[in-house]
Length: 193
Image 1 (cartoon, rainbow, N blue to C red):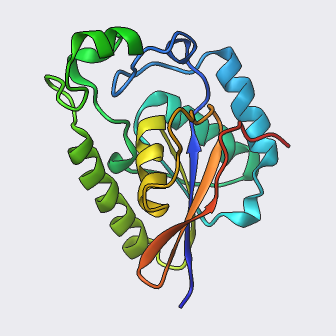
Image 2 (cartoon, one colour):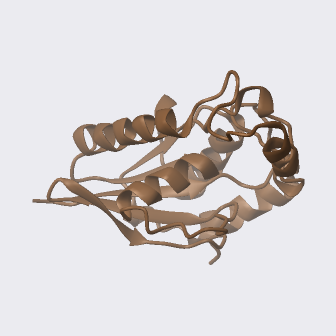
């Protein structure tokens, strides 16, 4: 059986990332630092390592995917709705401290997606990738909370460790083999050549 690989590239930095504000599905663009991070990451990505590029529909991810694709001549970027960031509902735009102070249960936020819902969507994404892209090497541009959840699933809740934060433009890889997902590469740092 041929393995399926899923590369999880986090989008470049936004102004809200700098201030540790919850972005969720609010469509915040990358800032200039984020664009430069992605240009560096694009130089580190090897085109021959990937068969297809997927992206979240949010502009910060889409622009990241476009920079990677243009650097390596990928003619198509496929938008995948399941790659969108976790919705934080009415907490979007709040700092992490404000979020923790305002909500006693961080999993229940009016208008937001619970961790349980995010986990279900993450399992659906992994199932979709393993079915629609079986045996392929898929580079997917997405967001911190979703990538953390996917890594957690693939590592049987061992990664990411408490307090670890995935850097903007970091690349993690999970692989599907023998009906299960495992972590093939784990990194918190931005991808650089």
